[in-house]
Length: 266
Image (tube, rainbow, N blue to C red):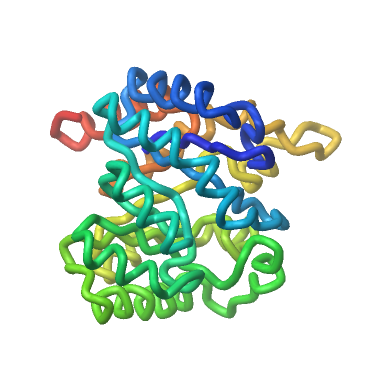
């Protein structure tokens, strides 16, 4: 899953693809690099980010979604809002990626159910402005599984077919770096959710901390792609459904290597 951020403030590339033309061009480049789906989002979910008004989110994403879908690209919409999802579905998206897992706007689950589209349900404890204050766990894996399990159950209650659900443990969302590493170390335990897994680890702060220089300064965002690709290979070997990445080419190669070592083809 290739990331197309149509935002001025995303942590990895805020503002770089903010104009619709630039975002579409970037999306097509990611597709050429081997992305299976392009994830278009108009709201930054980095810790501390302020939410844009709904009309502004629509203004950002709709021209991009429409152009990419018309070009034949498989497109997902990264949104927590039912109205944005509805407009994006009408424009041709084939998947809804909701980082709030149905908690940000409960009406979104009904929209997805009626459309019959696949839905990524992410573990969530609050919006970007407040989520890191809620990164408190006694057993992060057990609590994420319990809370995400309830979110998935709510998806079923709303009418989303179980074969359309994808689970995301929400790496970096209301999690410290140590929480992220613990979830990745114990990834096999998440199989007990019985849903395909999507992981978004690309360029995140816990990788920057791991790769800090001798003075303790975290590795800059663009210097984290090799580590992101390494994680893509490792989680692919564990059988995850997908990885959400900014640099598609390197992660695509990493997944191909991991898949081949597992005895199949990519």
